[in-house]
Amino acid sequence: QVQLVESGGGLVQSGGSLRLSCAASGTIFSIYDMGWYRQAPGKQRELVAAVTSGGSTNYADAVKGRFTISRDNAKNTVSLQKNSLKPEDTAVYYCNGRYWKFFWYNYWGQGTQVTVSS
Image 1: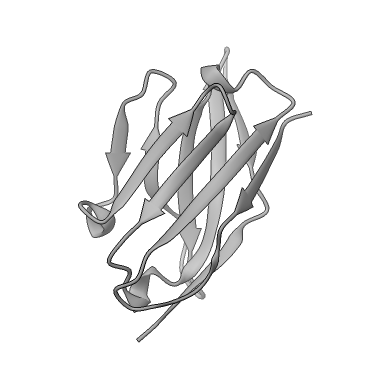
Image 2: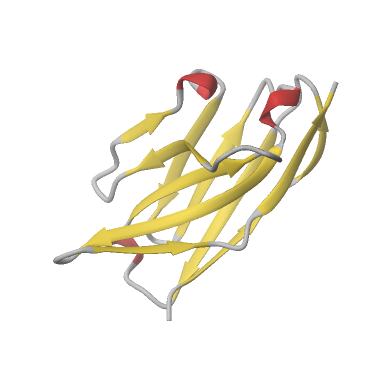
C-alpha cells in the first residue's frame, strides 16, 4: 500500500523560509510523477509545483522564483523549498504522487499546515 507522509510545516514570518518533505513508502517511487498542492480555507486545492519521473519541473505562477521542488529517488522523497514566503502562501500543503498504467493511479498525503504571518 502506497503511503505519502509530509513533514516540515509550521508557522513562519513573512519573508521567511520553510522546507517541506514527503516520504513515500510501499511503492517504486521513481516511476511516479510527484507534486505539491495546497488548499487555503474556502479555496480549491491547487497545484503548487510538480516534478515528473524524468525530472522535469513546473510551478504555479504565484510561486515561480520562490519555491523549488526536488526529488531524491534513492531516498524516496520529494521536497519543496519555499523562500520569500507571503501570507497568501498560508494553506494546508499536500504531497501527491501519481503514475499512469491504463489509467492514473493517484495518491495523497495527509497534509501539513503552513502559516505565514505578516
